[in-house]
Figure: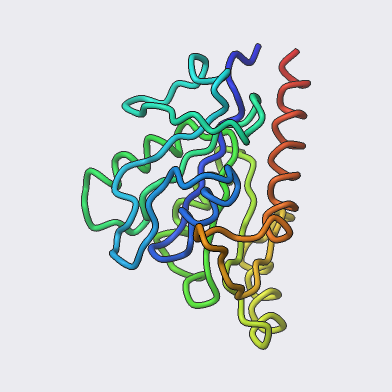
Length: 196
């Protein structure tokens, strides 16, 4: 029986926009963003205040995010290609606990070998997967989307975020994140129903 919320780990290569996506999903700046690489140096765990006691990931202190439903927790993980060995260890530990991996990538990084090593490991563990192709230039969609789908090799929820302006808080618009948000909520609700 499930005792805590669904743990969705957001991962991908450096500069893909993982922290911006996490902040946008929880509607709060819980994770630092910026041009310094890597920006996220250790995993950031966000969950609903009512779920803090039931959300356990070794070494992480949950951050209360009231906009999240109680049955979803999100981890913004360090870059999969982090140079710092501590970052890599923390990232690997977060992925080991994941119920769902949201792989965030961009048009220029979607075929990076290191990210795909983790993606293939998640597929072998039968972890639920979703892919966010972030900041996709409109003119590149017809070429990249079929190739990315071919690389995935199996049906995986794919969310495309076109190049777009961020709001004053550095977040994506509700219109952009709502499909991802609804997918998270639906996946968590299904997992909860399975465990009963």
